[in-house]
Image (cartoon, rainbow, N blue to C red; front, side):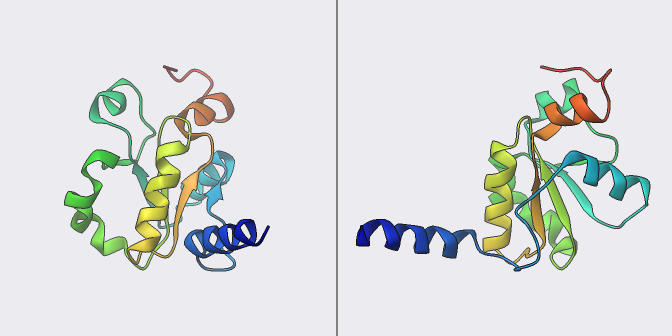
Length: 128
């Protein structure tokens, strides 16, 4: 039991970020931010072939596979909000974690990814 408690503490420490900022944001909230003209970086961490298949207007492509070598390209957004999305939400969560661990304190993952976006926001959007 003590080992389990230690694991939970370590996991919470790794996952911690600004107390008021959740790790995930839903796609409807992201759409509201876009419609309101809020300033934030919408970062697509899928591969280029996925991006070429379908994308959210205004998203910046930075594949997870290239993140560590190209992170300087988003340096201007270090102190601002970043919403990362992928296909279903797994990669974007890992990217958001990496970003927070590297000083991008306001990074969040879009829950459900572009698939959920197609379900909730743009029903005619291509799904793959």
